[in-house]
Image (cartoon, rainbow, N blue to C red; front, side):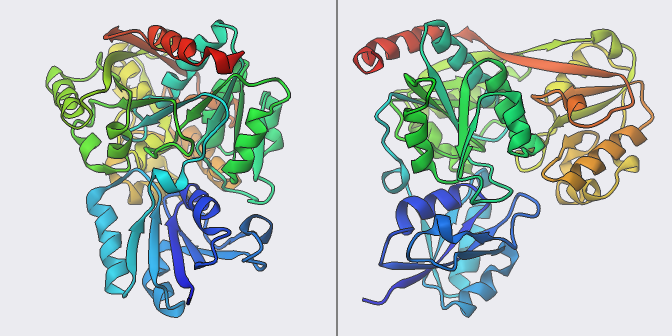
Length: 448
């Protein structure tokens, strides 16, 4: 039987997991290339031989997605496997049309082929879009479990933007570990809130090896919390599936891949940010949950915002820095910093576009909807410098930091800074603590 030539279309995350779980040791297929998009500077590398397995002694090249039609012809490709997330159905099928036009089949791998089974109870936290408030939901779940005396290990959706072989299995237990692993801002935003609260988080490239390490962590492991990224479905088979939805983008829960998969498989659906969304938008989201996931428990929650120095915002001219992915491929036009500026009565939100330098200029060209906010882009050293220079160029009274980490710890900001903190607060429906207590009781035999 002739092997099928395959290209995996990805963005340095789900693509590697799909390869590892389905293709790595599969003699029926020959993966000739990965393509990469969404994240700057992740193409031009190789998926290394030490991760690719015995069938790929030279490793596998990673190209830009823009080269896809030519790659299909060059490698005589039989099928292309779409393997990244937070993308509209229109854009998914536009890629499918490119693939079909070049002569190849277009394929999606589902949970049965890619989910791994843990020997520990697993709670998955996913979302229908980037920037819904998934991270604060994960934090609340973990804090609740830890308060009950359980050893919680978080495993984060991958963000391997550096040396893939070195990032095979990453364990973060202290802030110092973030420096050791040379984390980007995006990685720090996800990992730091976990380690600062005292729980351990794993990430990397090989999620079978990561799962084994987490289950046998030297500090112990009672429960695994899958802290999902973008709007991807879990890499691990969940025993309790929680999905977060955003009424600031009503309808997106039925328009983006694979966010709708997360919704349709949810045991618990959390409509977040109800304190800052319209009643009409909240109702649209709730109706959609009831239509496609009628057995889900629905919780409505506020994204409660606190500010460390509110006096720096009231009546002031402010520059707002928000979480990067939320603004870019998450397509949001506001974030926690914007809500804080509005509620506290900032005199003016400064437009950063005249002050942009370097790669941030390209970001605003690619994502013109961002307008008067600064996305905290920091995938590499140069991007960090561009971000720092742009912020310090701006004539303003203060900088509002709406990112999950203290950005002033990573770059030097000359202006006064006000940092935003946000937490999940349930206001309608059952409390998460009650749901988690039922979950623990169900699995208490496995937690001993």
